[in-house]
Length: 393
Ligand SMILES: [Zn+2]
Image 1: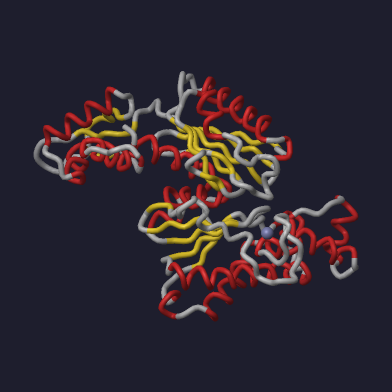
Image 2: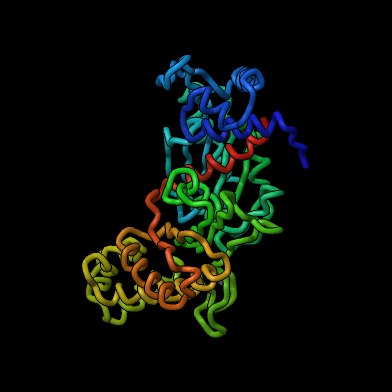
């Protein structure tokens, strides 16, 4: 474990404050509680490292005018998101604002070597286009549990053949910058903490839907990973002994009821049985159904599609009831639902949770859909690595 001295802790706090936007020197020195000379020395050190720069005079508060400091303009973090059939890559500035993003289809069954090498190639291209020799760091989100200490995926049904592949070390060696890898629900929770609804809360649950279902836990303003970075891996919680078969080989897991594959499976069954004209027509017209098709049918008012989503949401709601009682979050944020599905899903989850939880846990606890859409994982990836980079300055 790295020992962090008081100067380094001050620099970390300074960088984390500037990550939220420019601030005047006076405000920063006050916020850090540092004498002016010491503060100036820390700023000089960070300026020399190319992390901080002066951004002109601050608005006058009377007396001597202060100058503004901000993250240096050339700081760029990379974010890589793998999952739901896609590879997404983005660059952010030092305040973690998305600057460029790129996406292409990716079947994770091509294996980790091919997928990681493609991610490195795209990152290298975006870096070159930005005219940079080096990125400040790269954060990677994977659709399954990750052994964060090893920077590699644990066994995950959503990532066949990826077990223990050194994702972190491979990308770090190729790009020559720090890299951190984590589970996508954790990364999305960090995105919410930085730029979404979660910004206003120190304790919240981020529930992630999609092919893989998971949960990111923010406690006391920081991501909680647990002893082996497996906290929040709720997709394979058993809900029934004899439920539907799950991708993990077990039956009755949460994901087997409300993952994308489960929704699509139920939609196809309903379409083939002639129970839903909307889904039946879509199946005949476009071939295999997707969650987007289910979402469209829900929006068009198809009662069968709405019932499918409500049934899935009820199962998820039951799990959220337990999580809320256990953790007592200030808010629950739900992300990753296909367009059209969110509102019906949310209404049902709210119904279950408010009906079944204790007033102490849910008295003033909102349950909302994420307002970051598909940006949560990219911003969260940048947040993940910036936390590490800033702590090491
Ligand atoms: Zn399972």
